[in-house]
Image (cartoon, rainbow, N blue to C red):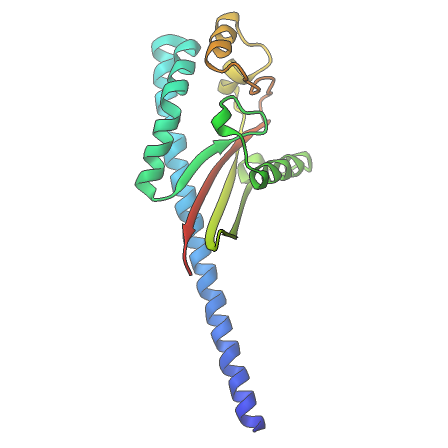
Length: 193
């Protein structure tokens, strides 16, 4: 009886170890997919914004961002088969308001930045249970770069301020300095076991 019980324990241990290894592999695959989607989105947004800036300056870039950022995000998400977006504690677009768990991650990113961690390295992920389904969640901090300050900084030109007031009446995405965390990219994907 002891040998049978010991054998059963070894089989269970081996099954748990294999299951843990598979879970780690799945998490790495989910993380890689999330990072690729974020890279695609950031590249597409930067390309369009750069073109708008060259064609018509910051006012044109704001108009493009207002009309094209969400469709570009949806296109990249659809191509990748996941949910993708950007959120901020100080959002410009009401659609970029964080959920409770996203706000908690953003606050944690701010704490890590205050402790000296490089913003470019601020990523977070988990697998949660949502309405009986598994959901992989991934966030990556968005650093404020010098070019961002034209529309998100403290010294915004009157013409840019005027367009922001019209397109984003509840805008809270100004007052940033280079190196601040402006928000985060968010990727989620539901899956079954």
